[in-house]
Image (cartoon, rainbow, N blue to C red; front, side, top):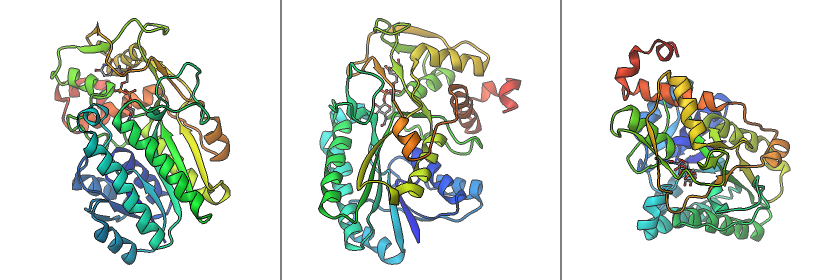
Length: 346
Ligand code: WQD
């Protein structure tokens, strides 16, 4: 019996595949390499010393997808595959709706045909939009404000209908907060393809010299230091949440939503200060205009996942900064910092 991981060479997918293999599961990956590379498969196999069957196909290729289900006895599917750049989604909504939604419809149809009814879906805290009542629980109201977030919300609704049509389905909807960090080995991390305009990507553009200083988008929010607050979660903690879910899936209701976050919020300036501590040097920044579409504060109440999945985050913001730094250095993106003894010792 195998676990099918769609988007298994992606950021969260690759870290989850490592945890699955190390937990003794047999894993089959499908990935269209739109935001990953074949090299990541080799890294997964080096880290785990296990082989992972990988098919470079797209969920839009339904015939090829069927072949996978014919060739392997799939017991559950963890579905990561999807485009995730918010800014890009605003400019190219159709690309996002076709890829994320039609891809998921194909996957569900083939699963149904092969009587595979366990599905864990990679959703996002983006579905909550701007909220006044915090922390965010799974009962908080939802209002996606960009095409990327809308694909996540629409897919959640589709999966609820699919699951309610046949009691054999078990669907877990995982709403990730802000995944950051990298595998402690430094061998895998978030693939920077220039499409992400995330806080972490921008910090590294400063460290590599691509940017002269970090632009803090807004310093006048109603927060402790005027900058936005987010619930940053280490990608390894996130990956472990999927293993916990597979172990509990039979005891859960047909469709269940879970917030995967730490329950703590950190401001942009707090993240910068933490990076400076780990790095042992200052990161130049300037306070600029707010970024359109940003919300002031977002952080989770992860109690439901803690209790029902018997899962809790363990890693700190320092771990996240240290691990992502190690990953960037091991890619030789930051050679001039190699002289920094504390980092070399990592
Ligand atoms: C975090 C904070 C920015 C860059 C995104 C996706 C969301 C989810 C998580 C997938 C914000 C500030 C950033 C910079 C800055 N991904 N910032 N200067 O927007 O919370 O969410 O990642 O599910 O879908 O939208 O993350 O890292 O872009 O921004 O000040 O150069 O950092 O304003 O407050 P975000 P982010």
